[in-house]
Image (cartoon, rainbow, N blue to C red):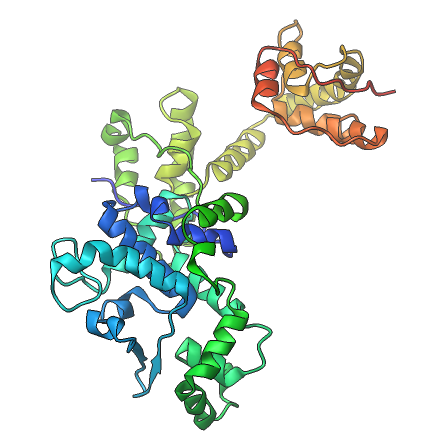
Length: 408
């Protein structure tokens, strides 16, 4: 049995407006769990409630259809208070989109399963975690970022009592605001609507945020919900090798994760690196087994190779580095106009003696010598053009049409 992997990093970047709109678009949820249109519309409604009303999915599952239809949604607190839930037009549109499929099921709850049965209050939270995994948002903190988006909308608002009423809570930093003022703001719906419409970044007509206009804004502003590389393939060798199989079964609890990972790396990386040298594992597969990033594994393998060098091997490597640091700049200055660094790298690898290092070291050498494309463009006062699909194809074929002035 393969145990689920926690993310190598627990950080999920702050959401832009485009990222928030993406979570409200059912098409974003097409690769998540429970991917039917019914569930995708429901998850999108949950996201709208989180970003525009600071309502958690577990709280949303307590709402009834009657409360929604009569505009009587309220958020209760553990202290015995309750606050009105004001729904911006974009939230109403997201819920109504879901209700087109939900109303025919009957029942009293606003949010139900596709068969009409009650929805468990943890289902929505798991859906957001699955969405995060599908898009490589390793922290799984989509909901926290949606709440943060709501909170940031009111950073410059001076009516603190109204903010707390809209957030349905007051924090330790707000204890200087008397509860009586918060209650007065809570009961003044006109006051709350003024603050919400004045400050929230998704206020206004729903058509600005949903549908064609919303998709256009998502395309321009979204950063995070983009396809990621395919999942790491689990081979038969990984399932049958004793060490690999044990790592596949390893339970990653999330507590003291760094210490757990460090212990397993110290114990198993030497063996796994041997398997990699024999072509039985890739760097990505080792990273998956040890629950870390491929870059981290590359750096550790590089450090191991350097540490295993004998004095004679180290001296020979340093001699080659000194020789090629000078020679590669000479060859680069002698290249024909239009030859890209990628094509140049492929060319210098073919002669005998050939360039013994990787492309990254070549680029660093060019940068150190001041002849990298961006540096040459800056000297000539021109901005380097972004690569197109055609230019990338030309580069892979060993040439290109872009002209780069030769270094002097």
